[in-house]
Amino acid sequence: MSVAIRCKFGMYVRERANAARWIFDRREKAMFWCWPVLTAHNPDRETLGLPDGTAYLIFTDLTEKGLLIPFVHTDGAEAFRLNMGKEAEWRAIIQPPGFFRRYITPAFLWVFRSTWVSIIWLVSVIVAAWIGSWFKK
Image 1 (tube, rainbow, N blue to C red):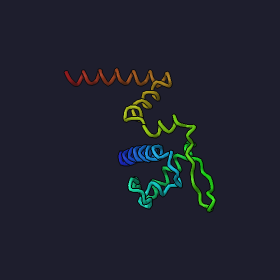
Image 2 (image 1 turned 90 degrees about the vertical axis):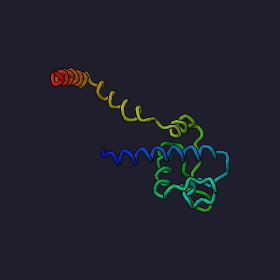
Image 3 (image 1 turned 45 degrees about the vertical axis):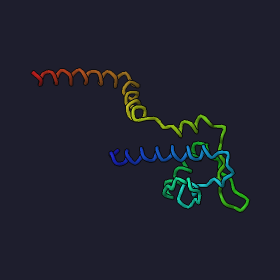
Image 4 (image 1 turned 30 degrees about the vertical axis):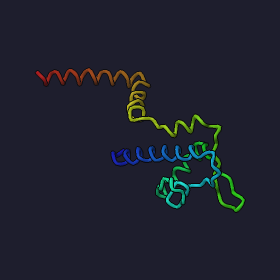
């Protein structure tokens, strides 16, 4: 995965967290919840003004996680209800994991998941330390 894709993914996680926080803060308002509320199409002064594609992806992501429940409004348009029964999941989306938990921890878990991988990793660290000390002399 290239660095540019990782940076864009990190930006998406932050935008999704901001959007989820914005939606969660307005959970008591009677709003027509659909993806354009996050874009500049929303006349609200406090709108996030996200691009249409990003707003749609965020709503799709929140729907797949069960935080938004789709329904058909009386005028036939698709809208969403907030699933407040999953408040812990809302909090997890609003506060995404940091750099260490997102990139470093999974790598260590992958290394130590298998005994053989752990042994090979340990031997490679020892060999690298030995080669480093040998070049230093």
